[in-house]
Image 1 (cartoon, rainbow, N blue to C red):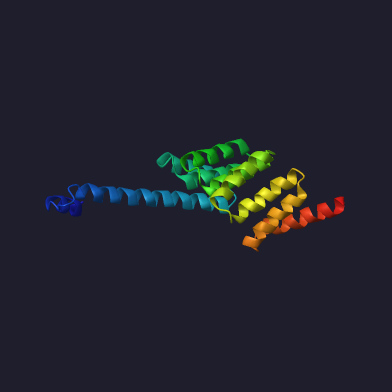
Image 2 (cartoon, rainbow, N blue to C red):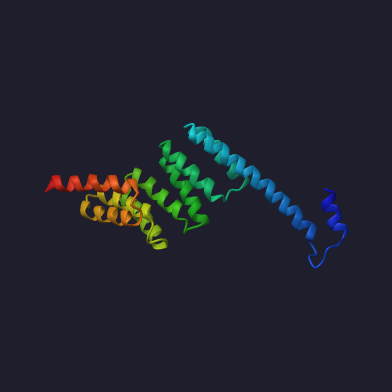
Length: 188
């Protein structure tokens, strides 16, 4: 506190509000440390598969910073794991209200819609992500999954191949491509 007092008494100009800036910086650092600690606790819960408990930490983060996109997305993913799909979609929608171009929120919303058997809506989310980043392998792979669910096996294989051309280690695309290819071969 003496440091803050001495700065304001020295009347440092050209920054008329220098002492205010330092107080804000100290507050932001303290807030940031608190948020980081809450994220760490939530992550520990996730690692221990204590998903319900992790939701409490995400809620604490959102009480401090209701526009924290990472907390909204992580909470949505956790709700999705718990089978609470509609609540998960609401979290992703809140994140997208804050940042409509957030690829993680778009892909996770698409994934939740896919689980809810809303494949066309899921594809819309993946297409939005692909407009932002044409080389988003996860959006391509997930779009392939939704197309496969709609019976478009050939088209789904094309999307899995596109995903693998970008990320040859994209496991979901590798496995799904093989499955779709086997289904296509068995139907012929």
